[in-house]
Image (cartoon, rainbow, N blue to C red; front, side, top):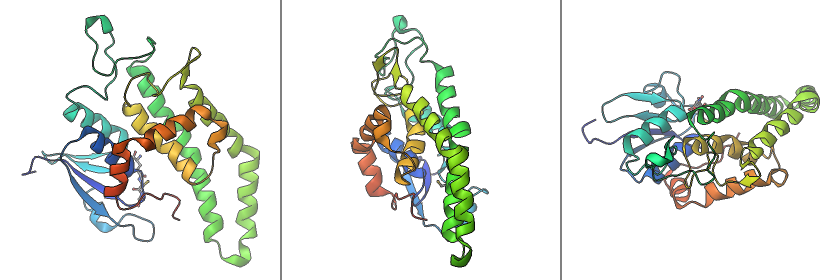
Length: 249
Ligand SMILES: N[C@@H](CCC(=O)N[C@@H](CS)C(=O)NCC(=O)O)C(=O)O
């Protein structure tokens, strides 16, 4: 791109807010192309950039089209986080470490744990949250006379399996903020959020906005959620984005 800035294709009321938040944390110049939803979905202008029409989509200054939030975060942090503020601590702090040192001294806070937690969000938590969304929409969009039917299916799936499973998974995530009895602010024990936090915040916030979880039951996640939303960069992203209500359906 001629202006040497990345462009974020940002769909309103979507997880693209988390990428906008990271861009604001990095404090870099970028172009924001906002897309309104059409019947809840991506418009053709977004599909023209990314054939699967998902947001966030980021176009780098060289014209590379990046998709998937955690890959976009990886690219942005590698490209622009010059002070290493949002990176993993050096595997060998004795060799100098970096600006985001591990404050708990946990030797397990490495790229493997990062991968494990990000995959947990995308591959374990996300499918169940998607089932929860599909069931909710099924009931909401069913014609009134037959609505009791999908409502019954939803009740049964949630009661027999889904809600207990989600409670277990969020309980696991909550416990990841307490390592060897020491509570931490960020998942990898750093002073500032890393890619893991930018990634996992989406699943927590998605469930909170839909009222699928009660954060009172997950006090460390509650503190994490409050910590993220209180950051000035989160607030700036809210102002710049085109709305961030993911329970809009
Ligand atoms: N796995 C993708 C998911 C992206 C995604 O599903 N985004 C939704 C918004 S939350 C979207 O673009 N939906 C519009 C559509 O599918 O038409 C990522 O990590 O970026």
